[in-house]
Image 1 (tube, rainbow, N blue to C red):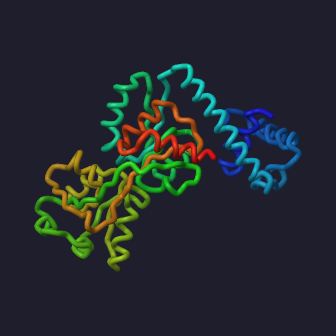
Image 2 (image 1 turned 90 degrees about the horizontal axis):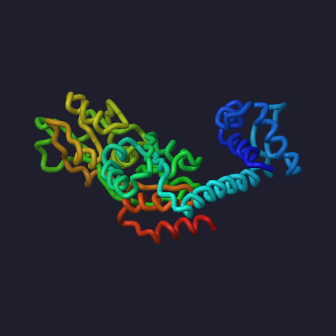
Length: 309
């Protein structure tokens, strides 16, 4: 039994049993992957995968239990490597953070700047994508930390921590009729074309939920992942913008005004997630505490210890 066999099984399950993709990920050949899987099955005396001819089609019932053990073994192997680097006194490495554009653009810069001052030998790799992909990257080990507002708490493979609350704001040109109102209602908003985030991004679910509960139909004429893009199209007069408050606080487009909307939409919680059972280097834990100063080191340690039981 060897780690290459274990990786072949894990990646086959992750890649939808497509051995060509598995071979590409593991930098080997498709026959090589097939051989690694078959040799492991022969050693264990049980078939891990269901087959249709030579093609893998799924996991057998024993295979599901074996895959869970393989995931743990490979995670512990990675933890062993991380621990050895930690105990050898190394303060260098790469911290890979998967996050959304909004977090990377408006929230992370100050945290990263302070972190780099404390850990100048640690490189930071930012990966930007949707919350779903962020979760997948952390679960697979491609990222050490995931940061997003939506989705991260839904995965059993992750331990997530609440970091801070924020609200949406309404963005309109200074001459827009809504700017003259003392307080904007959902009915007021529904009378105008809207520009906001793509579904699944930056609290969009709370926006849709508020209008649905009020029985109001909306005309969302444009969506984007980027708050700056949304504000740009609002400046062109295409509609009323609904964006994250931190985007406006850090970079409001010229000629636009921000209107209070916390009374209209439920508050949002940005969460930070790590892989359940992962060993955290000291600098990784330090980054978490800098991003979420409301957390204590004991909170993180306790959560990870409990998740490993």
